Length: 299
Figure 1 (cartoon, rainbow, N blue to C red):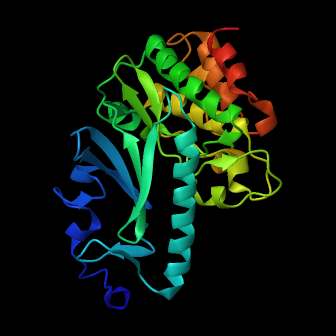
Figure 2: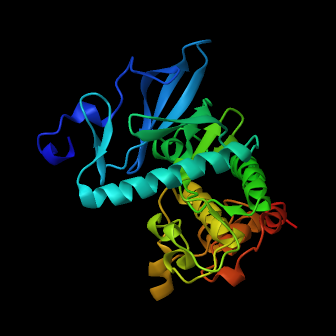
């Protein structure tokens, strides 16, 4: 029960669903990834043995799992936040189930169980970009960058055409599949646009990838917001480190332009496109995916 919850004595194995756990029509095989608000598992459909990925809503700040896999709030105050987040998670699943594109993770179902909610996605083979860069298992060439990010932009363009923005693009949310084909993951921060006032996007911020306007509740967000994060992810590929955070750049911009820092290592038009995408002020960036694609093509 929530009133007996003590983080110090809480069994660590209860943080995750254990191998062999049956949930709805699936059996859990292993954990694939986890974040502050959810965990993702590799699972198998019992009926036909098809592998899927299942995302479970479990925000560790607000809730925990009990011995019988029920997810309960840590206290009464946390219960309000937990329930609000659960509604948003279900909304994310519903939006994603309609956003069908080869470069966007595909949601094939969602269900409620254990007092929380689950999202069922197709399981794709690949490695996230952050892991590839960290382990230096990929050679970052012009061909690699263009193949990967043009496929990512194809998916992102589809999201924008449906009047949504992702708001959490970063290397750990880009799955690199065979042939350097990108799959965009984690739509927990997705917002519709345009809208008059903005709320929960301020809660999902990643240093180095979130532009200045994403830190400002009254700012207008749009495709240009995602474009900054794409540029920052490309910049990370060039130097294998997280770019200088946007708010630090706003105070004093110490980021050496890519066109200077990587001169003669990559074509000038490619470096200029990255710098353009990473312009501090939203109005100075490409305003659409199509504009960035054209710049990457040297147009």
